[in-house]
Amino acid sequence: MRHFGHIAPEVRERLFHREPCAFTADSPPQLVAVALGATLYSPATRPRLADDILKQAGRGVISMVICLEDSIDDAEVVGAEENLIRHFRDLAERPDAEPPLLFIRVRDPEQIPDLTRRLGPAVRLLSGFVLPKFTEERGVPFLESLTAAETASGRRLFAMPVLESPQLLHLESRAETITGIARTVDKYRDRVLALRLGVTDFCSAYGLRRPPHMTAYDVQIVASVIGDVVNHLGRADGTGFIVTGPVWEYFRVQERMFKPQLRQSPFLEVRAEELRQALIEHDLDGLLREIELDRANGLLGKTCIHPSHVMPVHALSVVSHEEYSDAQDILRPERDGGGVMRSAYTNKMNEVKPHRAWAERTLRRAEVFGVAREDVGFVELLSAGLPI
Image 1 (cartoon, rainbow, N blue to C red):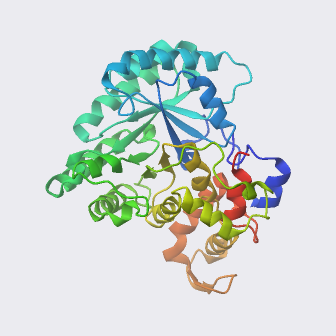
Image 2 (tube, rainbow, N blue to C red):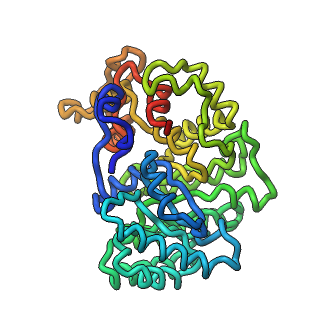
Image 3 (cartoon, rainbow, N blue to C red):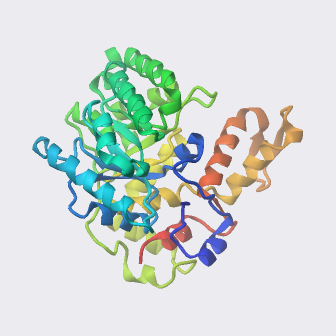
């Protein structure tokens, strides 16, 4: 699989100075973590789950979470598990099926070995589990169960803890809670693929819900938690983890998301203002601002609950030609000693030592999401990747 692999090769060639790399579920964890991109959540109760998974893969979705937790009613859990098992087995029996990276969001630790056992040979399609309301106390049993399931199945399984508990939000317990989480995920570092932020639960603790014209960063109590999580758990010194962006809740239920005139060409003929107006009409202008703020605040990837959110996340994850040029300049071997230079675009200062970690992170993103050609921006990337 690869990002933008669902569009024609000749279109990719026109879009990218450097195309996204190919990878598999068995690629190095550091690459898989960056490649998660827009992780699409789906309730495990969907009656055509296998077909839905393949449909989204064909539209550019790279990672999906099949949810047995908050997205379904408590009374539906047993039936949802059976549905999930049945559709995973169905997928495993389709010789040409190419599903995305698949994770299961569970409710309790006992589900992990039970589901892994019940999947049988279909466990080969599973990349791991999403662990809800993660704290040190709750997290250790989940991670111990995951380790046991991995050993029993012979399949490499990753954990994606969700940081969403009230203890993390409340000021009097935040520092202790983050320290405990850090201690736990460090102990199981080889199995923790990424940390996910549960901002909806944070808002719930105070009876809040951000409107579509505001981002998570406009809600100060939420922004403060994001800052503290990145401060402790997202450091670039080798001790940190990939931390993914929060969910965007708003969407319009429409199969064809944008105006018909945006379909006239998959490349270069879409005017930026037309696209911007279409995004505003479909409540996605706020999403675009939040994606930009995610990256500015050290987050990578995003939780998504609607397919229309996926391509905006991926299009804004592509490294611009200017970013790539700066990163390469900073990381040239002859500049290991430091120093400062004017950027090749002659619009900024590149200081080698302070900007090194940024440059390394940018090149990792460039490997997975590609580098746009010099004259290609978000509009062209988004319009080329949208399903027609």
